[in-house]
Image 1 (cartoon, rainbow, N blue to C red):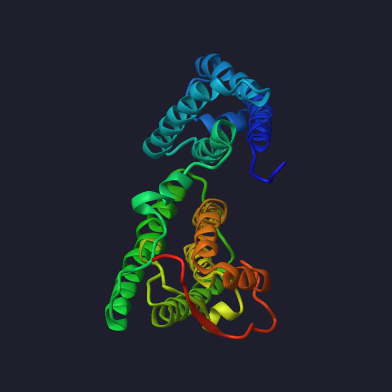
Image 2: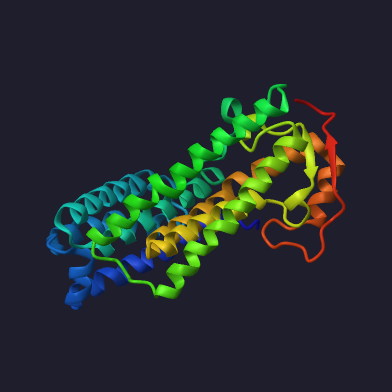
Length: 313
């Protein structure tokens, strides 16, 4: 069995069925749990719908009834939307909204495994949105394009998304104040993480004749700069920046968002990107992949090079 397989998806839904049953038992017997996760939402009418549609349907998927996914996932998405709106308007049941967001995200992934044997999202990385080499252009043009990408994506993922998450954390009543030392360390960590991202982007653009964007990838396999130590320094940079921002904002939710983004990148984007690189650069990439790890830097850098693809553009 591969790590990502239909069996893993079914195992998740079994875990979800058990967790849902335990949660409903806690709602019925522990007032603090009921208030934290349901607030003023009537428990009995919700249970009448949710036990069969969430708990039992999750169990059905776990034992191999794949079609039950088509009932389960829409129900989870609906309840997630209801809980998010309720927590935002009422300022109550924030933990219920958090749990449903986690459940919805995991259920979508598990449903993809159960129905198709792969995580959702991989199909989006093919065709017009697939990995392909950048059009021929001067180094100056490519550097400008890379700079524009950095401004857009860093603004989006490090400001536009994290700030509302931190505000919702406060509004939902799920904020956990972090120690001042952690907040300072997070703010400080943003600087080297950003420097690593800039170093990686410039190295890839100048030596690879492309940009970090999947739709305009380099023409050369770049083994230089930070790529001599770790295979995906830009991903390391991005996740480190996000965690740093979360710590600086004293927001565990932003930290979780950053780590979840890294997990999604690792499971969904990375396999497709590496398959593309293996196709374009063949043995050169296979040797590089064997020598340099995805996340953990080497103690000693590998020899530098920048080999051009001879397969396709």
